[in-house]
Amino acid sequence: MHLTVGMALLLVSGYVFHELAEAVMGQQAITLLDVQVAHWFNAHATEPYTSLMLGVSAMHSVAGMVVLFCLLALYLWRAQARYWLLALVVSVPGGMVLNVMLKHLFQRTRPVFDEPLVMLATYSFPSGHTTAATCFYGLLVSYLVIARPAWSVRLGTVVLCLTMVLLVAFSRVYLGAHYVSDVLAAMAESVAWLAVCITAISTLRRRREAKTI
Image (cartoon, rainbow, N blue to C red):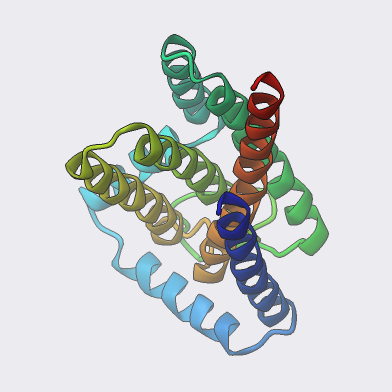
């Protein structure tokens, strides 16, 4: 079952990423929507929302993700969830490295404004912040849904983690750091990567457990 679910997630998310990448590189209709949305938010940005979005982005920058990563790693270590700890170590840093590689592959420039809220020199597609958040919260929700039998905890975890991913994605578009297609592609990329990582670690665990029987 875990292989079937993992493969389904990989195929669907991989397809979504492929379609977004083709649309962006081919300058299709979504790129016009990207520009319109980016300029609308730039023109309507106001306090305290701008400060809030800056805070959300800072929390999920490289430095912020290191802190979140270490906290979750410590929790998994104390909970003796060794395979989940391995999945965390592979998925989050690996997803961030994969994102950098994809940025240099597509080399899409970031949104340009007369009065930008943030200024970044790196490439835009796909969003690094959104990738890191999706990998982290996706791994967290996968662990808690399996480890916690109470449905209230499972549902609350799913809602909270999904909200955080969407909030991070929204913050990057609001601040003009990314286009809508950048964050959508980042989520698709990360789901595909998580499916690979969690399925591989789960397979490893099952094989090792089978050998001990």
